[in-house]
Length: 368
Image (cartoon, rainbow, N blue to C red; front, side, top):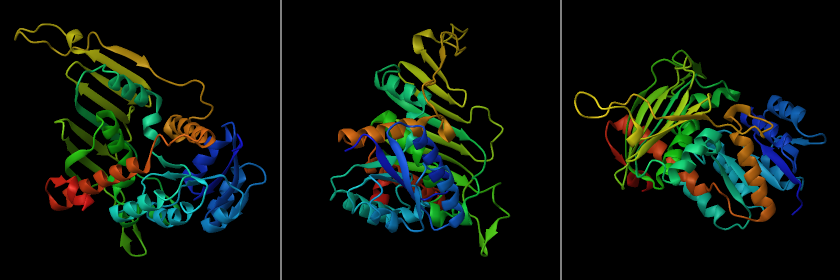
C-alpha cells in the first residue's frame, strides 16, 4: 500500500470533525471523502477536509466511491452496527469510534463479521494513549507498584455537549452514560490489571443535568453521576467515580493505581504523574505506624511536545491515528481490538443493570 492513506470520515458531527483535524496534521494522510445525512455536518466537515474531498449523504456511497483506503466511523452509537455491516464487508481498513455498539447482541454480530475479513479493524479507545495515562500504565506493567490491588478513576466534568438531533440525550441511542462515556475507563481498568471483571456493583442517577429537556415529547434520561465498583478474579478491585456536574474541578480526570509496593497517579489536564513507594511514605507516628504525609513522592509532568495537535484528548487521538496509519502501511495487527470494545461495553451495560435492579451483576449475565 502507498505511504499516503486516503481516509473517509463516516459521521461528520463534532467527533468526525475532530478526527479530520487530527488527520490534517499527520503525515501520510489525506481526507478524501466525508459522509453524513445531515447537510450542515457534511458542509462543516468538507470545509476543513483536504482540498478536493467529496461529500456523500450516505455511508454506502462513500464505501462504493473508490476514493478511500480507510474509514473512520464516528456516527451515533446506535448506528455503528448498521454502518459496520457494510464497512466490514469491504477491503478498506476500519477505525470505529467507541462504544463498539449499544447491545451485546450487536457487538457479537460485529465480531462475527470482522472474523471473516483480512483487512485491519481498529477500535477507537484513545484514553490509553494520553501521555500521563500511558506513563502510569507502562510503569505499572514494569512493576513500579508491585502487585496491583486497586485501580480508581475519577472524572468530574461538565455535562454532555449538544449533538445533532440530540441523540446523546437518550440511553436507547447511546447505550447509557456508563457505556457512552465510561467504556474508555473500563477499558483502562482492564488494561492496567490485565484481566476482565467478573462482578459489577453500581449506584447512580440523573439528579442535575437535562432534567428540563424533552425532545419530541420524550424526557432526556442520561445519568449524570455514578459510582461503579468492579471485582476481578485475581482479587483486585476497580472503582469509577463519575460526576457530570463537577466542571469546577481543575484536574477533572484522575487515574490511581495502588499496589503492594507503591502508588501511581495521573492528573489531567495538569499532565502530572505522582509516584511513591511504600518505604518512602511518611514518618513514624505515635501509634507506631507510618503516616501518609506525601514525603518521598516523585512528581513530574508528562507531555509529548512533538504532537502537532492536542485536540479534545490531550494529543491521544493523534497518537492513536499514527498507530492506526502505521498498522495499515506495515500490515501489522491492531493494538486496540474489537474485543477491547465489546468487553468495555459489557461492563457499562452490567453497571446500568446493577443500578436498575439494585444488586451485584455478574458479567456472565451480560454475555448470556
